[in-house]
Image (cartoon, rainbow, N blue to C red; front, side):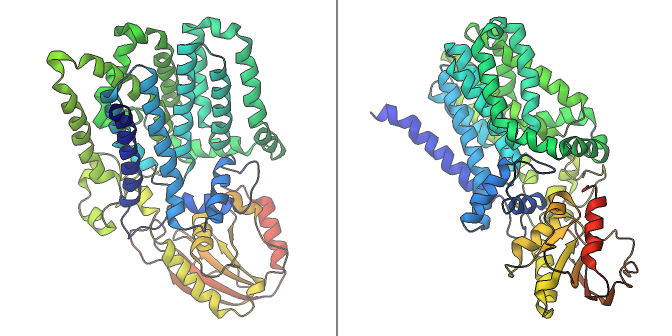
Length: 508
């Protein structure tokens, strides 16, 4: 009985460790990250699609808001996705014949990896990696058992993975030709096509939404390629793949070798070819490094089982060494990959961050802090200063907070003490959420530091009084220098101007 309960106890210890780590790796100086505010606001405007992401994240946001919307719950759900990824890897190791050592090695490799960083932010990425891992697991079980129910499970996972992030399409783009090459009989199985139909039914509401809105995902991808992916160096992308799982890179290498050296794994060679195809597609398209992270967890399962088989008899001493090596190699990454230090401390000791390319932002330039860290600063300050201005306006019913970007709007909506405050922007999904049911007479205007009209000459003829009331003073924040203005007593119909701006907006 004790022997049977030991694996469950160890798995529970990993789960608790994972949850605890996700809550302690962010220093108290940091707020939520820019994207998290947008996703939380999407939970207030449920739809089958959004301009930048599919709907799944908004469903989670809706649940977070029902639970009170605290930071605890914002951090809980990406951590939960990480825990479920860990559990699936544990189950995959068991399905491949691995015993307790392989499970511990695999769980260690998952826990002490870049997934810890991905799972600290409420973004679609955590569920995306979970979806990739679950889909690979379903296909592993199908190849092992030849039971058709696993095809339907894979289809369901793909469907919801697609509704979370379109990135999962790259998984299928790699897996389909790999299966055709290694298991051609799969494509004569009618259940494969019935399962594909199930997936199509699941994703169809979002496809209809995309069609009704002229496929904004296409515009988003073009914008992404033009403004961000163009700055991605393909060689740097490949280097990042090694850094992401530096502590367990030997486990991944063992997995790749096992498909050709371990007879029991030869029937799973489709995973190896799928990996090569998907990674090649990402490289060719100049994808961001983390786009490919979903590829790796299932290979940690293969590698752990193979090493357990190799580390026997005379090599059994390598078992504890491998686990300790995983943790030891991860420690240097841990010191720089997580916001455990204050912004000032990072800026004063930035060389290690620079050496790993962590100071390079989407603009292709190096800055004082990693971009994600800078995107977690200044938001509470902004909301507090906006609240101070909002408090002075007696006619709150006709007051609009107009921001320069979605981070500003979402942060104000999240941190403001006023439940009825209305912060929007001509950026991202907010262009569909303008509350123009009432006439706008006053505006609290938020403008980023690169604004070309600090004197507000554009609005001087539209309002009786314009005052610059403050700015974000946290020099480490990406929003450093963002200014706050109050525009009081409109002389013309602001609603008509806003409607025209919304109509002409490209939301980028």
